[in-house]
Amino acid sequence: MRFDDRVDAGRRLAERLEHLRGDDPVVLGLPRGGVPVAYQVARALRAPLDVILVRKLGVPSHRELGFGALGEGGVRVVRDDIMRLGRVDEDDLAEVQRAEEHHLREQADRFRGGRPRVPLEGRTAVVVDDGIATGSTAVAACRVARAQGARRVVLAVPVTSPDAVESLRGEVDELVYLSAPSGFSAVGEWYRDFSQTEDEEVVALLRHDTSAPPHTGAHIHGPAPVKLPVDDRTVTLDGDLTMPPGAPAVVLFAHGSGSSRHSPRNRAVAGVLNRAGLGTLLFDLLTEEEAADREKVFDIGLLSGRLGQVTEWMRRESVPLCYFGASTGAAAALWAAAEEGREGPAAVVSRGGRPDLAMDRLEAVRAPTLFLVGGLDETVLDLNRRAAARLRCENRLVVVEGATHLFEEPGALDTVAELACEWFTDHVATTS
Image 1 (cartoon, rainbow, N blue to C red):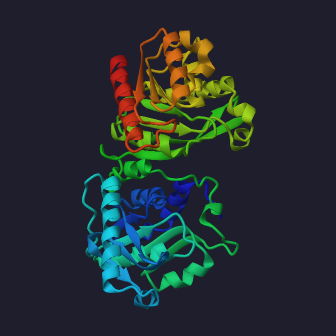
Image 2 (cartoon, rainbow, N blue to C red):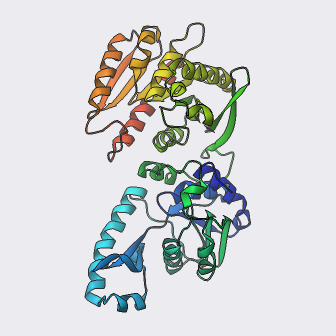
């Protein structure tokens, strides 16, 4: 069994965990890759979502050899036999623990933003990861959950190694997995997309209220998988549509070369827009086969045509539509926005975009356009300055100081999301 990505794995895993809905569960994702899986489980169970933070306690003379684990609140699990083997005395233990407590606090602050952890006392803790190879981290997390007062501990993963299964059963009240393939060698080989989960995506997911019942103003519907017909229905594109109740607009994401709707950066931005009440559609401009063709990846005319067709398909929502483009996707967004005879988007945001690839079309763009570029992305910054000078519509170029092309620096992507959200909401309000 292979999974498209962590979202797909989480949805499938959630179906196997429906019996826990009435068991007062708390869903705990192991950061970082376990959190997108856990998010889908928490939504299905209408349960609170949190991270379970675990730090390995390593023998001072051989850090890779773990003699225990440390969790929040001073919870400690140690292996006395390994301590003896590694000649770890109480002073060593205290020193290692102090260092790891510092890292735990940093992680907690980064992921929760000052919110307290969800209490586990007397509840069912559902520990979720994207997969298990050896099981050492999962075992430590389950022990920490139990030490924090969980009445019952369930470990749930999409895929695990067969060797880990038996050792894990003795650690938990219930072990749930979808696949334990005999040819297992690494978790990532069982995912078509196993790209790294960024801190920003973890933070965005943890901010959602997963325990809210459906059809209330606080609940976000989605992301729901959709198929988008294009090219006279000979090609369908995969997408994820999220529509908060009463959304005043939907933002269509046009991804850059080598990326897809699974982009952790664009998903993090989409999460911010959803919390502000905006709908989002993250979709693939190319099929999986087409994405392997470099000519098609840089065929801006093809990409913009696809975006235009999806735009017309989305008109059924009867709300203003906006574009968020990254890299070559920004060129496609601007090209599509310049198309004659078609109602254009209400606003466009370009993140680290390549508007130069649509330079001949820029003067025809009428949608207010925001360019966001990293201050250290010098070549792209110069291209964006030239593009901004060609536009005849309202536009603004914002340089995010200290950021590179992918905005991977701490706080850089948060700035992008906030600026994009403000641009869209301001211009949607103007058109409504």
